[in-house]
Image 1 (cartoon, rainbow, N blue to C red):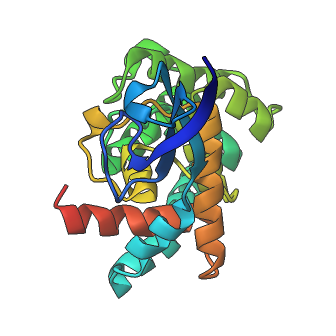
Image 2: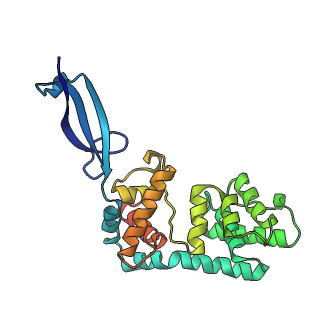
Image 3: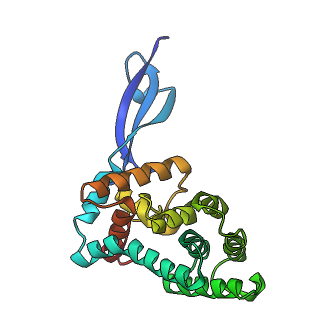
Length: 247
């Protein structure tokens, strides 16, 4: 019997296998069939990922729906965050990178306003000779200890050293964004925006290193179209997406 490989069906599918015309993954289904080419009689079927559609296109579609206030939010949020960190750095006579590192370390599960309060309290405790156990930030104990280590490692460390201590991808990217580097934080909302796919955060697939880099490159590409950095574009579309979907 002779066999041939036929492309039988082309579907646009999401990363968990459901058909979704708004998603960004295109798959082609192949069947190993006899020479008549009847895919129903195929002996073997496989799903092959062909190529990602443009994440940047989806990001721009959301950006076009942004209000002036939302665009302004994107342009200024990280600059304002850096200013807040610089104020604390000046108060406690510490390098900006150390203060930003402390803020980034204390950020998981923490509201921004509380994040700054917790950072200020830790800086006060450290510079006045206190102990890490005296600090009770609204985040995980491991994050508290990581922030303290950044302070304890002293002023001779540079930004790369602090990034290594932070280690986690989201808090490290958050650190670099506040420092002004053209990257962005990829969270569940950022994934949804780039995929034009409204999901709950629990439904968003795991974001590995390769996908994170692809999404960051897409936000950078979309940002450049409007004279913005990746983090400015991500911040603007993040608040726009939340308004549109009431999340």
